[in-house]
Image (cartoon, rainbow, N blue to C red; front, side):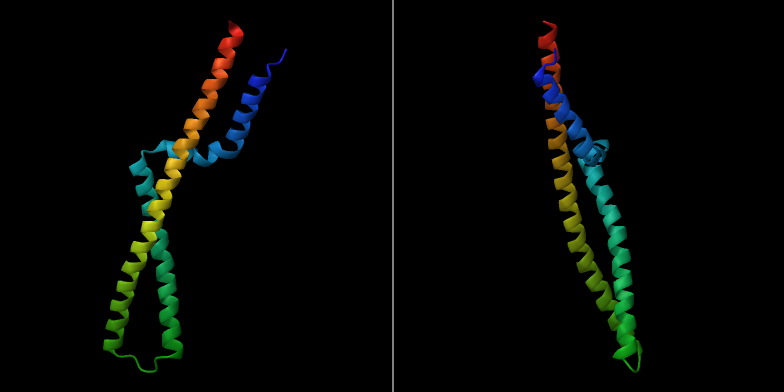
Length: 131
């Protein structure tokens, strides 16, 4: 005869594995610092590429429609302002990436702890059935 609690626990575990475990399994492969720093490195690369494309497009539009004569002062000013804006952009962007990575890692720990509790509950049901 089927035990209703056991079937319920097994169904919950199967649904959890299907829906959430894959999403948070990567967080368990690293320590928190390693996970966050990996995400920060990827964010630095992605943010730099995005900024370079946006900056190049902005300069191209500026040169095509606004500036008629280019001199060295304009170039130095454009590069300096571009670098300052890049530093500000990358600081804000990486701060957000780090916060999201920390929250995701903590959520992964909570989800894995819940999964472990479910496994222990199922183990308890099996122990009671054996007795």
